Length: 64
Image (cartoon, rainbow, N blue to C red; front, side):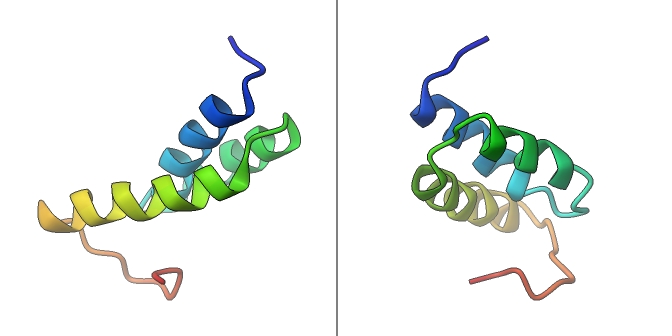
């Protein structure tokens, strides 16, 4: 457990990169807990790029 905004942001980014958006509530909870959302957005982009390079498809319009 942590209250570090950067670490919370990293985990929020992972949740935001979920291709099925099942982890959306987790991302919202992390945001409410003080996650650094600039870190979260950057980490989401990195995670999405890695997942897409491995064949994961995103069928929504969340992609930047």
